[in-house]
Image 1 (cartoon, helix red, strand yellow):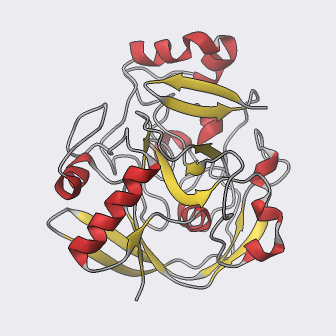
Image 2: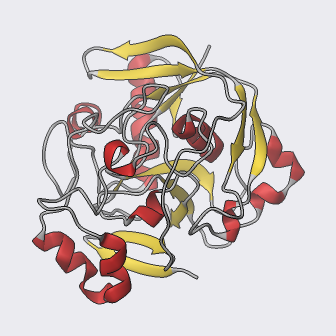
Amino acid sequence: MHIAKSFLGFVAFVVTITGAFTASGTSQADTTAGKSYEMPDLKMTLLRIEAGEFLMGSPVDEPNRQDYEFQHNVRLTKPFFIQTTDVTQAQYAAVMGQNPSYFHGDDLPVENVSWDDAVRFCAELSKRQGRTFRLPTEAEWEYAARAGKTGPVSGTGKLDEMAWYADNSGRQHLDSAKLWDADPNSYFQHLADNGCGTHTVATAKPNDWGLYDMQGNVLEWVADWFSEDYFHDEAAGMDPRGPKESSLGSHVMRGGSWGSDPRNCRLAHREWNVPGTQTGSCGFRVVMDAE
């Protein structure tokens, strides 16, 4: 069952069961090749991610999982480059000439951007660099976020180390799941009173492939339309691009944010919203096609 949360335009969908987070082994995925694409003027780095296979979604015994996190094997046959951090406010302003963010700071992730805004940014960056930039597919995003892990948290397996989320994004540590379950109507007032918000990118620990903030800080738009059952299709096992349309008219967002309780920061957790939505909790990172 989903329950909607809203604050500063923040939208999240949660369940009402908590569970412990531990790393649970490795997948068949390859590691990065140690290559990067640098844009010094933008202070932007993308790492090359090699082709490989991994288990996408969550096992049936993972606490807080949803049916639309169907676990299945995915093979990605082409390498790609992915940004090491979310797009920052300075990077967005340099390319687009404006900064729409609710929170302010050059090295904070840009937020309050819609899926349409993110696609326009990719188009402008492509013109600027003479390369093809785009949003990651949902499969590319989870492959890179997991970096070989199969549990709900990447890297060290400890969410407090890997992510800025509702428990640790403010002045004092909170039990955000408990706050939500006790009184959803006052949840965001608790976060506001505690000064919760975005943090400078790359200040939490990176995952095993050197990517930062794949969990927490800001939700990340991906290219795919949302469908609950798309990944049940056998054809979605190789280079999936997502469904051609969404019955909800919504695109997928991944990773959780500064306002998410830990249940919504799991690597398999999926959220969605219509492409014109702008929220104080949602940003994006870019992918570049490998040539």
